[in-house]
Length: 73
Image 1 (spheres, rainbow, N blue to C red):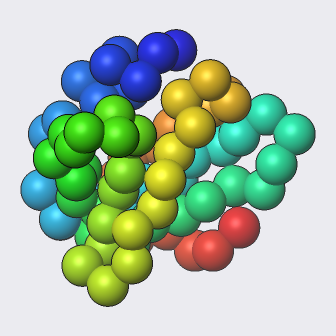
Image 2: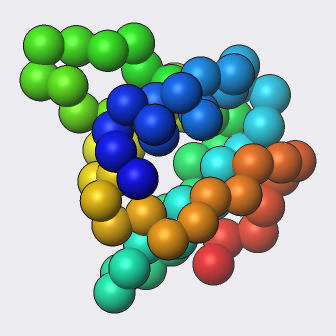
């Protein structure tokens, strides 16, 4: 998946749902109340929970789950 495809897939996040991202050869990342950070000059895909920013490597994403509150993995 490309960064542009990932950004499109996450574009509807409005802070009401959690996101769990599963990566190839890495631990899962859960972002509570996720929002997509608007595109910046660095072209990185970033999610935020309002406190932290999470950089997502689109090339290593295996699958993503979007939904109500998740328990940490």
